[in-house]
Image (cartoon, rainbow, N blue to C red; front, side, top):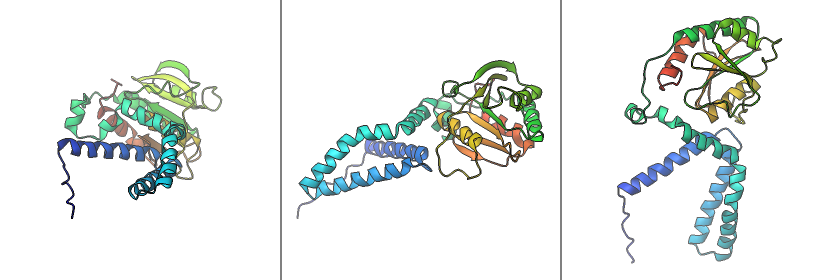
Length: 269
């Protein structure tokens, strides 16, 4: 009997396994709930069949599958164009660091500086409450490190101090800027009427309209925190890293925003 060589499992082999696992997990996070996950599983199944066929020395079938896999890399780059773009943005924005242990966040320079400014959130809350009272839909993007401006389209620069009355005016149906998102950065309204990328996820609640899907879409591609007020129900929602949290009490909005922004070393000093 021929003895098989013992499996060598050293430090670099462990790091290799962990790195591959992290990449696969992030790819799963980006594709879950979309049609892309089915394509990914299909490609994975073909690759596993190819490995089995090659190990059994079935030359003809292995050659066919090998050619398919070789050419398929280019096809995958086209099919997964949006997902790959989100994956690169995720790495560039360092979104994965926020869920890491505190010592890793400190190593990357992300520390809680405790410089939350409640004044702007108070005005924002008052404005959104008035929007709810008037049955106005609202969509507010609050960036942290990554600038959502290049991803949003059609926005109009504002550069004004955050105030409840201005927020209501921007989302008033008679306003030419009401149909889109408002961006608040560094205690100021930077732009309004921004058109955001709509998420293609299929696991979102059926009652979610374009406004909520746009909020999820921009949070998937940047590290922004997004606040949504439903025009139909007046319900408040917060979206972060693609996670939609509905039914948020208006009284809890200021605390939720302060905690989320300050815990990530926000650029909103």
